[in-house]
Structure formats: C-alpha cells, structure tokens
Length: 404
Length: 137
Ligand SMILES: Cc1ncc(COP(=O)(O)O)c(C=O)c1O
Image (cartoon, rainbow over all chains, first blue to last red; front, side, top):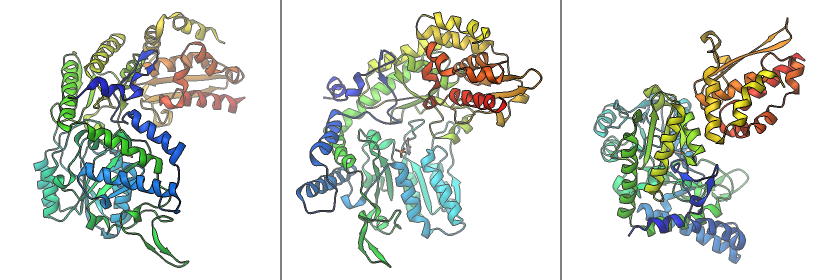
C-alpha cells in the first residue's frame, strides 16, 4: 500500500512553518524535498567517509570510490541501462551543455537542430549557441494551439526537415504535459537524427524505461528526484556516448598525460573532469533507493489522484484559467486568475504558507505564445496529499478575495 | 521624514495582520496616478524583476528637488512603489540622502520586500533614487 502518512513523515521539511503558517510545498518542479535518508547520508559522508575518489589506495578512498560507483549502478538500474552509460554532471543544464559541445564537431553549416516550442531555456540556449558556433540552424517543431505537442505532426516535420539533432522534453516544467515520445524517436531513427530528451521533470515522476523510449541521450537533475543539489547527469547510448568530444578537461578524466599530449579515459570517465560531487552522488543512492522502494503503479496512482483532485478544485473557481494538459501530466499545473498578475497571487499565497512559483518558469517562448507575463505554477510530488490541495485552494480563494 | 509618507503609511502601520497590510498596500497602488505611457520607456524599466516596474526619475533644478513617477503591472509592487514615491518625491538631494528606506520598511513590517531575492525591483528602485540623490548633492 502507498502509505502517504508514513511517506510524509520521511520528509522533515514538510513539517516546517513559513510566515507562521504550516508549509504547503507545491514547488517540487523547481526542486523536490529530500527524505531523511538522503540528508543523513550527506552528514554521514562528511562525518565518517569523506575521501576523494579514484585516487589513493587508502581504505576511505576505496570505500568512497566504491560507493560513488555504486550509485551509478543504482541509477543505471533505475533507467534500465548499463552503468557505463551514465555520466555525472552538476545538473540537467550542464548535461545539455556537455552534449551540445560533444556534438559540435559533427555539425556543418546548414545542418538543422530541432527543438520544441515549450522547452526550458536550458534546452534552448545551448543549442542556439551551438548553432552560432557551427553555422547550423535551430528549427522549431510544430506546436498545437493549446501548447500540446502532437507527436504525429512532429514526426512528419522531422521526416521532412531532416534535422541532425532533435532535442525535446519528456515533460514540460511549466505545464507538466507529458510528451508522447515514441513517434518522435522513431522519426529520428528513420533519418539517423540524434535524439536528446530532457528528463529533468519526468525522471522522478515517470521512472522512465530508457531502452523502451530508445532515445540516444537523456538528461536529468538529481535535485528534482529527491536527491541533493549540484548533481545531475545524463544517459548516453554507449556507442554514441563514447564518440562525443570531451567537454571539460583536466585531472581524473585522463589516461596518460605528457607535457605535450594526453589520452583520455573511456566514457563515462572522460566526461568527469576534476573532483566530482562525491557526497552528492553517494547521498543520491538513498534517493534512488527511496523511489524504487515505492511501487511505481501505486505512486503514479497516488500522484494522479492528488493532481486530478487539484484540477477539479481549481477549475471550479470562477475566473481561473488552467493552461496545463489535464490528463497526461506529471503533476504541474499552470494557471492564472482573470487578468491578475501571477506575481500578486503567488505573493499572497506565500502569506498563507503555500509555496508556488510564478513567472515564466524559464520558458519565455510559451509566455510569448500565450501573450501573458507568466503563470502561477503549483507542482505536486509523491509526498503531497489532498490536504495540501485543500489548503492551497482555501488560500487561493482567500487571496482572490484580497485582490477582488 | 515627510508628512505625505506619514499619512500614507498610517493605515499600514495599524493594519491588523498581514492580509490587511497587503490590502492597504494594494489600495495605495490603486491610488497611484497612472504613469503616462510616454514615460514608460525601456530606460525607465527596472531590470531583473518578474513584474514590470517603471521608475521615472528627474531632478528639478529650479526647486532643487527629486521628481519621481512610477508604475508596475502588479498590484503589490505598485503599492510598494507608491510607498517609495511617497518617501522620496519632492525631497532635496540632501533630504533624500538622510532617508533610510530600510528602516522605514522595517518599521512597517515590510522589510522582506526590500530583499533582492524577492525579485520585485524595490531594492533596485531605492538604489537608483539614492544614486541620483548622491549625484545631485
Ligand atoms: C525541463 C527542465 N529542463 C532543464 C532544467 C534545468 O535543470 P537544472 O537547473 O537542475 O540544471 C529544468 C529545471 O528547472 C527543467 O525543468
């Protein structure tokens, strides 16, 4: 059984008060809260286990190295891929930069890079920079009027336009909408385009089976999956991964160095230059264990129940406009109230102890398309419950009263 | 401190609880005269805010005083802006330099709003006014 009371007790931050009100945390799309096990693992590492990895033959260093590599194996299992296909970075942003940089030498002027119109800036700007450097061109996949991605339309577009790279999100941070990736990835395969999937939002909610998705590269951030900040990574199909150019160079990632030339380690080592986020990686194991200790179907069922309840309650309020897809969603709801500025609503909600985000959520193209300055986004995770929704709706009604 | 500011902040000071406080702030915003569109130029836009905030600032040499106007597309920031304008409008540079907006916001229980991490531009506005006052002293 999915024991939500027990789960909530595992996340100490949920017991905090803000502005003298019990906290209602609805900003998990920005960063998830951490279970006690992750917090303990960070303290344990620094108190008892701290040593550098892949260096030194002393016991602590060997233990740290083993634990560091163990998390790689756990995460590889989580994604159903091989552990040498996982690279650690400082987050999804760095992962996309690493990939864009690693693909630079195979782009020629006139080559196309296709993106969707709802990407996070992290999955737009590195590609624009890459295009500038190489003379390639960024093209935008078709988008429906309601901002949904019709995968059939996208795959037709890919077949026609023949981009070299297709970068698309698995789930939108602003809207929560889940992308139907299968037709898009098949279209990529048919024309040998490299597919890059931004899993920053989906990795925790959807526990993606990557061989089934069958994309070439998949990026994630640990802090959005119950793990520590400053850590993320990417999956790369090994044949492709090992052929990417290195991103940063220095210690740790080399095989041999002379004063005039160096050879690099095999992937994934060649992408991990310098001392990595050892404590973060080791503590992240506890986050993965936490997620996999939950039955996936039950977790999704619970998330969906809370999400659907929130949608229903919201939609019942006169003047609320919801922008998110209401069925196929990881749990992020973007909305506005009449013509009110999302900043005002979010500020008032904060006064009631409800943490939501307002603004463009690093997706300015979406806001331009909608012709609005931004939205209020309430984003849910496995540890939220219907009481959170009730408190949120109550606070929202009170906020609206203050505005009207 | 000038009398306009005293008058304007009286209701905020006596407001019972944060909700009343916000109500008063938003009311102040509502009463702020609309800023002419001609003044809403990019130069007047305070950078780095989630909301749009314009601050027009001029120095009236004949009166030796600061002339301020402003607007925002959000109610709360507009209200806070009205407070700032009430605090500084019409002051001489010497008087303006004496003002500590932080103390005033602290006294009103609004100090959170002067934190740069709030992203509302209030701090940037105060800095801009103070810089102007320094230059004209
Ligand atoms: C869809 C998406 N992609 C990329 C990122 C960037 O992640 P990070 O800031 O952890 O590097 C985010 C984070 O907000 C996101 O939501």
